[in-house]
Image (cartoon, rainbow, N blue to C red; front, side):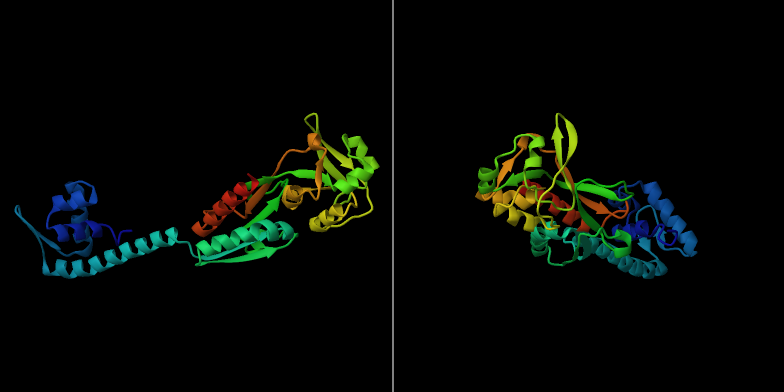
Length: 293
């Protein structure tokens, strides 16, 4: 910092030929400008300016120094301008990870829209149902669904999801429509990773053990089975919205639906995120919120 001390004040005086005008340009006092220029001359052991009561002019040494300093300050202004433009138009690489199905159906279309809007950003997406170590994998952030385990990671909620129980009209006509949680024992409940479904009854969470003839770790496959009348399913709303709108499946047990869960962006640390990452996370938040409306 000592090498730069007084330089901007000196250049301002040289360009305006006045300590008063230099102070006005810099938004400071004339005394401060005079003091900084004097300290600069002392450090350089060189007189840079001739001072009289009527005018200020450069010495030969001052003129040489001014020409070099002006180039340095112009370069600094260009660097700051380039940084401003970089912030206005993000560029660089972003690496993230997301669950496979949710990533394919919900995240990738939004990312493609983002890349079309900001073509200088490169995005590396790892779709996996394994929870990667964000630091070891070099990810800027991860998208995680549902309830988060205790973690030192920093999180931001992007949107919410809700679990819905449904079945085809054909299945319900043949097997009846359940109206209470106890009736699930009478139904073929197509299972995912767990042997229970989550509900809320009278304000309290309940995990109801279920059984059925099919277990599969693919929500899409379970939905296809439900459409064909094989049984009931409980899946997040993003799997089901199109099928519900088309009427190929029908919601049941609405009164027992559990609370909405978060869809999160998790970051490996609290340090300031690059603008490109912040803009993508904001873009995802806006898009996912609009889809939920």
